[in-house]
Image (cartoon, rainbow, N blue to C red; front, top):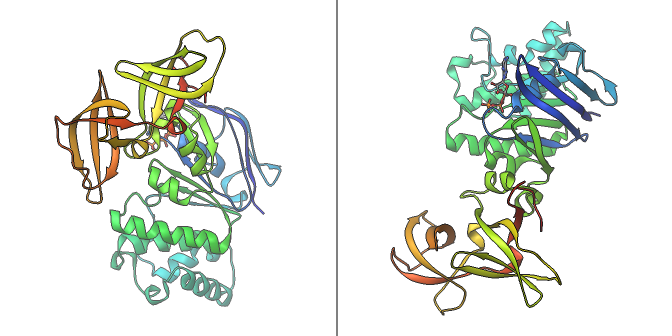
Length: 356
Ligand code: ATP
């Protein structure tokens, strides 16, 4: 059992307020990803859970026990860093068995545990090698094996794939997902890579400037972002966001921006004009050639192989549409955009918070 709870945790480094009042409840067996831009506080939060840094205020609980001030070795947690820190002079087997040797376990029981973990991670043929004789991905797996051999209550990982090339990163990502499915241990995983977060997480905690902006499943964050920050962070390319006003025409609400007037599918009686930001995902914009919809002019077309990104101008705004290739359009073409009201996201322009 390993449930990790953060209660109103804050951390200051001198005058830098790195973490502001973060509360997070990570269920036993969950794969929780801390995601966010550089400097938002992900590593600081993870280090506090590991016991490598102390919160300025707040509490950290492991299975309801307060571990806020407990030293790292009393926490039943295993940390895997982006630098693997393997011992170069030891074989893979000795590296993996190292934490058990320091615990004074018998030779026989260490050998059994190492063999077991090595077989789970496909390292059996490499047990006699030294770290210099391994690829980056293999070293990463040895570091993971060394963490696993202690059978910790939870794994804490700080960008463990960032030293791998794109292909290996993708393969190791799949391995980690399979590993989590198999062993069901709690994972707390730090990354700034949204693809890692979307593909691996049971839930994502998206951080911004020391605060948690939103916690939810990858689908929840993608489909119903709580703020323009979340909407703009997830998705490649990100959600189109543009300033508009909500106006009432004949008791129906519309979003109005220069050269754009789209129904929101909401009936209302009163309704003073309200400043909003409207959002639409690139893959939700339809390019139409039948004269129906919002008039637009093609600015540029980017070929992604299977799809194209078509950047179009609508008044002073540029929107990006992601469409199957070939889109059959060129810069300068005029066309219309199909924007379905069910695909529009509405945010308060001042606070950035989601309205609908
Ligand atoms: P990255 O993805 O770049 O590693 P991060 O989201 O993990 O970033 P942190 O490393 O947690 O961010 O840093 C959060 C903030 O706290 C930053 O402003 C950073 O400069 C500051 N910070 C982190 N550690 C210290 C420290 N030991 N002393 C002073 N400031 C620190």
